[in-house]
Image (cartoon, rainbow, N blue to C red; front, side):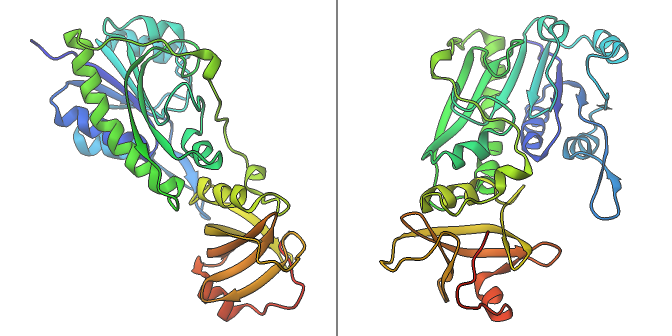
Length: 313
């Protein structure tokens, strides 16, 4: 049987393994649609999104519409006339005209166990919420965000110290394997769609900088989960001595018995920088003052003078 033509839509690193897997499996990709190049870094130099770089390396034509609802792109879509659309972290909501046209439908690679954590930042919110398991769901797309029927789903266990960045890489690889299986299943008619239970849905909205500001009056476990969920980007942060301090790795310990006010530095040794929180301590292991290099807690303690009663805010 002739393999159907696929239009791939994706933007960040998460989408690249899925793109590569489809090409490696011999599917004809009519194009890779991704977001426009964006200015990055201190020099604000325009850089291509990871999917564009990967597609050019793989010989897949690239389209970068500002808005996929624009008539110009919809005309391109009509002309390409793909048999199927595969989407992975694209960054725009598909209009009905795109969702309904391909004969084999539109499939989405979503990094959560749907219906949990629908939305823009599922990996981050999974860890922030203290979940111990996550996974990838391949769904058939509808106009409602992440609410389509589940075609395939596979779960993994989250390690107690794993960060969003580490889970991201594992789920990207899992998604690449599952999307190939799902495409084959849809073509062969061997996958049975399962409706999502909307009553069990939870949401993972786009993160803002304020989501990362640590409230030291929270339970120490919640703070550790926030750090894990926002590492490496956008990063949990606090203020120490008037300077923004990003925290990339931390672990928790129950209350040592002595009373400290929330955010107060309760100790600094080979274990890390110990900060008081509700019911215990948050032990900071990997830190970075804004505008400075990232460093281990040991390096930080060696170079920063800690005064009695000093606190993070």
